[in-house]
Length: 219
Image (cartoon, rainbow, N blue to C red; front, side, top):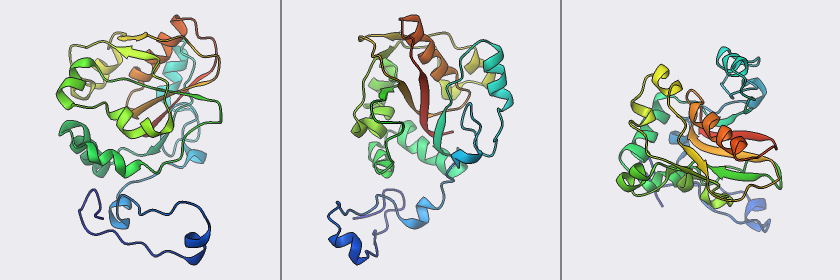
């Protein structure tokens, strides 16, 4: 088996307790060297509103969301958006390399037992071009509840400036009955937060009155 990123053979030094402990044993999907390129976010020192790394108090962006009347999403993310991660996301989403979703298949499921995991869906045009939904590819093995649909927009978020992202109009709608439990919205990348806040607004506009938080692979 080879690393999904550098394509070098994967090796693992097992200890006896792993082999006889009864838990499933499997190789990682990426090698130690490639994994070391990604910078994890320490939740203990992340912004309590958006999960920005090394911001233990509410960051300026979250203060602006709060001032606009938006309930904070208390977002959490696993990795920082470093050049290495940006290159991986380009290959995964921009070039349509579906295999790379497997690099993060071992991430623990976020939240608590009973939380409803709601993926942010791709626009229909993006799905046709790419051939898959990135959020479903990354997190589909967690058991998701697809409550939302997204209409096509004039331009992809990745091509917009920060100001253009924040000005993006609402494009989500609720397409299934709402649960009564806490919802965790899932996305691949958090940048300005506009997309996730639109999704939360759509849920509340449809009548959801419970707690909405969010999680992404990258912040």
